[in-house]
Image (cartoon, rainbow, N blue to C red):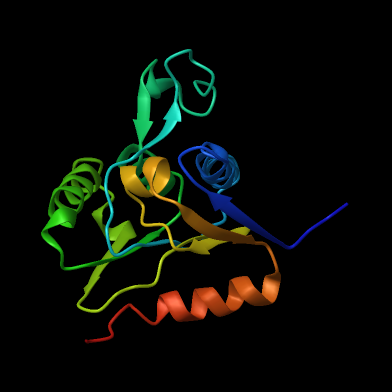
Amino acid sequence: MSFETRRIFKSAVTSQNLIRELLQLMLLGELLAPSGERAWIVSPWISNVMLFDNRAGGFSSVNPEWGTREIRLIQVACDLAARGTPLGIVTSYDQHNAPFINAITSGLEEAGLSESVVIVQREHLHTKGVLLKRGLLTGSMNLTFRGLELNDEMVVYDTNAKTLAEARLNFESYVGVGE
């Protein structure tokens, strides 16, 4: 059985880990087989959320330097860039995002990878999505603790080539476009 589109309804009591597990699978696919295409993270509110619980060492083969700890978005983004996947991050001007933007900018600069990221802030951003070569996750969820853990959310995971191409064109339009 194959599928191209899956809808996930999440609340604090149903499908709580499903979205995080899907994000993990998407990101693992890109970390293990980098596509070289820009990975997009579009979220009006964004935080350095925990993506992989590596306290038991289950993900150490992906990156032995991770150690036995929680692995957060900024570390994963830096690893993607180090493996040749350019990044596009689009978020709003909300002050909530400033710590994330400052930390990811610093992390990429320290690693000598600042050229591999484009960070765009938009005044009226409401779009949300994570786009990689092989999949697109869109829906109501911001990439924050509340979005992943607390809020009721509906997301759609899509692998349809036409949908991915359309999303890529739309996300790429954020680069160099004014308000």
